[in-house]
Amino acid sequence: MCGIVGLFLKDPALEPALGSMLAGMLEVMSDRGPDSAGFAVYGQGTPDRLKLTVRGDRLDGIVAELNGGVEGRLRDTHLVLTLPHSEEDRVRRWLANTRPDLAITGAGERIEIYKEVGLPKAVAKRFDLAGMAGTHGVGHTRMATESAVTTAGAHPFSTGSDQCLVHNGSLSNHRSLRRILEPAGMTFTSDNDSEVAAAYLSVKLRDGATLTQALEAGLKDLDGFFTFVVGTKDGFAVLRDPVSCKPAVMAETDRYVAFGSEYRALVDLPGIESARVFEPEPARVYAWERH
Amino acid sequence: MRVVDLEKATVRQLNAALHALAENTNETLWRVEHPGGQHALAVGLDAPVTVEIAGHAGYYCASMNQQATVVIEGNAGVGVAENMMSGMVHVKGDASQSAGATAHGGLLVIDGSASARCGISMKGVDIVVKGSIGPMSAFMAQSGALVVLGDAGDALGDSIYEARLYVMGEVKSLGADCVEKELHEEHRAELRRLLDAAGLNGTVNIDAFKRYGSARTLYNFHVDNAGAY
Image 1 (spheres, rainbow over the protein chains, first blue to last red):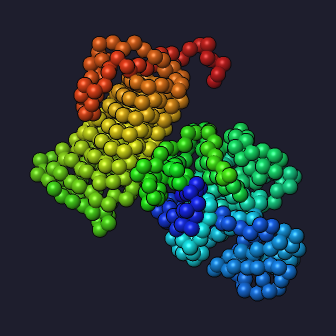
Image 2 (cartoon, rainbow over the protein chains, first blue to last red):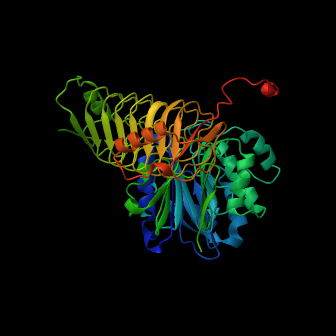
Image 3 (cartoon, helix red, strand yellow):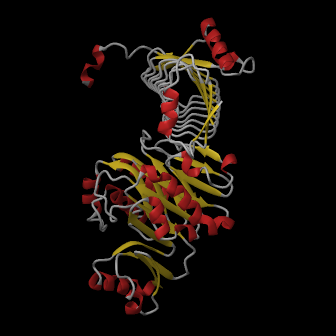
């Protein structure tokens, strides 16, 4: 069992409240996943600058050591580095060589990803999720099944620029898929089955598929139980396996699209009383795009 | 009226108090405040009392119910009235998956819509859904009646036994061995009885329903299928 939540805003007036809305939803899902929690938030970003979210200890001196136009914002165990695209290779190399103990949880122009072991409420508080603004975000509360309770096994998983995936369920062919994805250039940071699903979608997107096409292809190739919520730079999508094994409920209004593993995750959203509430059908891709 | 506030009491305390009721109790009306979508509310009741849940319920609300009337004044999560034996469960909002699953008796009324697997493996319960139902509903349904005023999703009544399905709207597709059948007098009478019980007396045109049931071709082994094993 896991809990997942997602929020995609249509009304820009809600953007300053994205984090507080998502934090409320995530906390309600604590019963479904008390082991660890994580979330991705798509903020405004700065044109031509890349964000790298770095997770680990002793993050204090890193920005000074990197210099070269690199800025940083520290949130507890995570440091979001903002840098010119031209500096990406250098910074990644420096991190790999000088600080191999650190993990890069996400990269992109807009995405920031935070994850930690612990109760969802505590995790959201550590990183001040409630204070974050953005256009869309996803969150996950984990009850581990296929791999250990570690921060590296916490969702969301990001395997491509500005992409992330959260997963409720378990995949049975993740080992064999991994053997196909590794020669296709994907690297993995965990033994987690959900990371393989994320990498599968990243390869499809890299090869030119739309988000909808990538997820539809996944229906053929991913064997197991899944409810996925996927974020891209401008997109947000939901897919359930063909027997809809794992729960999902959605609410849509003129102002937002919201996803929860259970309806109670959605009850505090503004205007929920008049929202179109529905459970996504099995094997059907639901996707929204920002224009 | 007994009021239980779930911001102060636990679900265990609520259920224990309801289980302690004698058959002839005078405390026949209960109200559960701040249910907050918690799971297993008012499960396993066995007394002729009414329990009002003032909001949304989580999983398996009113499951295993006998005799009691449970009214959910919001949405219900997975498996509402699962394995109900008798009594009535009334959901004023929508119901999630597997509403009325395996229920043997009683009446389940859903004012909104129910999602996937409504009435899965139903064994004698009557279910009235005023909205629509999701895919794979009435899968392996054995007996009882499922009445739907809206539409039904894919694979309605897959591998059905002797349950009777009545749908007024569109059926996206029928499951294996489920076929449309004629609406006879006895079915009209059953529909009238169930619609009345669901509070729809005289407001619905019975002849607008189509009936679905088992073609009974999966009941016995057929030698032509031997190669499949």
